Image (cartoon, rainbow over the protein chains, first blue to last red):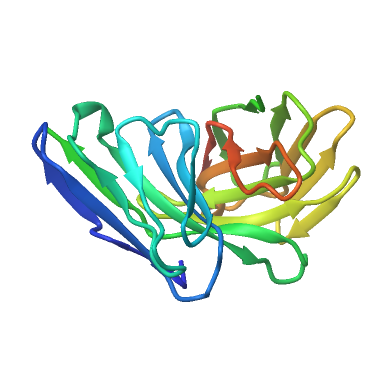
Amino acid sequence: NAGVTQTPKFQVLKTGQSMTLQCAQDMNHEYMSWYRQDPGMGLRLIHYSVGAGITDQGEVPNGYNVSRSTTEDFPLRLLSAAPSQTSVYFCASKVLAGGSGANVLTFGAGSRLTVL
Amino acid sequence: ELKVEQNPLFLSMQEGKNYTIYCNYSTTSDRLYWYRQDPGKSLESLFVLLSNGAVKQEGRLMASLDTKARLSTLHITAAVHDLSATYFCAGRSGAGSYQLTFGKGTKLSVIP
């Protein structure tokens, strides 16, 4: 997970509360993205960004907002949390994989969110 | 829309045995990724397969890609307990895109 830092690691919210999951990378990478992981569902893309000031929706964007004011940070906001947003959230950045010469996504450690 | 299917979803195998995890995808994907996830941890990149016929090997794991069949395989040779984890494959639907579509994962348990 070197280079992609997520906070907090754990969070419990009540329905209707808002919060922001933080993601930061110090590798000067343009591309960043957010995924959620639910049991038996694999990872699903929420939002992504190809650079500062540019964001776009993924497969499951509803209920989430993002912004990218700097290259380093890509926060994910839940404006009014719902129990369906209980999940593990991963932030990812594109990095050059050693040996292959190709880019891969490297993931942060994850943020486990529970909405009651 | 790219869809990625893995099978099996659960795999229990004895140490020393060989097995293969299959990853089928529905439309063109110019590369295929394999990741490993240990319980409660993040995803770790294992392989990226760039072209038809590509084969990558690391230790007891070997991944291959057949773009014509839209199939990638992850072969496990002489399994050991340390390989117990969940393995994901992922594809991308456009060149230059990093919006990956993941399979549901294969949970591998290697038992003595």
